[in-house]
Image (cartoon, rainbow, N blue to C red; front, side):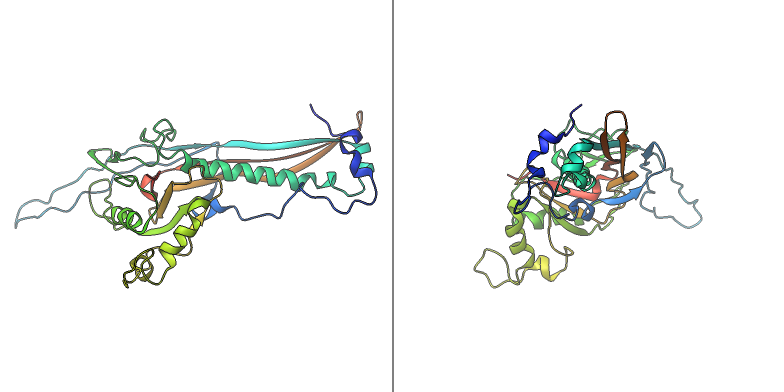
Length: 306
C-alpha cells in the first residue's frame, strides 16, 4: 500500500510558499439531485414492483352484469447497493512537518472524491440509456430509453420513451419529444397526461438550451411568433447541465411520472482515521453505500442526438 512520507511532501516543509493550489476546490452542488428522486434505504437491496392498472371502463346495458377486471404484476427492478470509498496513509513525520496543513485536509479531499464518483454513477444511468446491454436487475430486460418499452405485464403493446427519430436539440425536436410525453399511456393503454418537468443536457448544449426555453420569441427564426414552450410553462426552471454526461449531443426530458430515476442512500458519507502506533502511519478513510437506477421508464424520455 502506498504511504505519503516526508519525501513525498518535501515542499510542504518549506517556509515562504505564496500559496498552494490543486488539492481541493470549492464544493459544488451535485447536479444529479435535480433529476433523480432521492431516497434512503435500510435494507441490503430495494425492489419495486410494476403493477398493472385497471383497463378502461366498459359500457353496461340495463340489467346486465358489470364486467370485472384482473390486474397483473410485472417487472421488479432491484437496486443492489454499492460501497464507494477511498483512503490515505500518511506518516506522522509528514503530518508533523506539513507547515500548511494540506495533509490534514485529507477528509475533505476524500469527501470530494466520493461525491465525484457518486455524480458519475448517477450520470452513467443516462450515459448508458441507449445501450441495449445495460438493463436494470429484475427489470423488463430493456435499456432505459427504448423505442420498444413494454406497456404492461398483460399487454403486448409497446411505447417509446426515446425520440422517434433521434435528433440534436432544437425547438422542433424538443417539441416533438414533449408531444410524445403528452401522449403517454399507462400499462392498460389509458392516457396518463404526463407533464414534462426538466431538460437535462451536457455542457455543449447549455447556450442552445437557454435560447430555446428562455427566449421571449421563437429562437433562431425571423418569425415574430411566441416561444410556445416558455409561454405554456412546459418546462420548470432552467435546463439542468450535467458535466458528467459523456455524449455532447444526447439530451433528456424528465417527467412527473412516479418511481422514475431513483437514487438510494444506504449509508451516508462517513470519515474515520486511525493511527498505527507501531508504524506511526495515520490512515484516513471515507466511504458511502448507495445505488442508482430506474423503475418506470416513463420518468424520463431522451435521444442520443443525430
